Image (cartoon, rainbow, N blue to C red):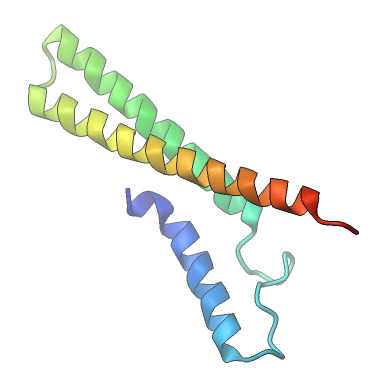
Length: 106
């Protein structure tokens, strides 16, 4: 699961290093300046989640057919469960941030 959120981890470290550099430095990279784009990070997280869930489903079907061991099926399903829980947590945080922004008065 940690490999699947590595793009997010690098983006967080870049934002953290920019924030610790001082107030004159912008806290987040500009979209066209070669820094990570939020939409690209979410897109890669979504594609990784989808591929993990598909792999778990394929392993489960192979287990039912007798082509995969029980251990392989359990590992694939547990990995899919962790990935899905992470995706749900990220979705909840993004939704909460959106709702907070929509409540702000302009």
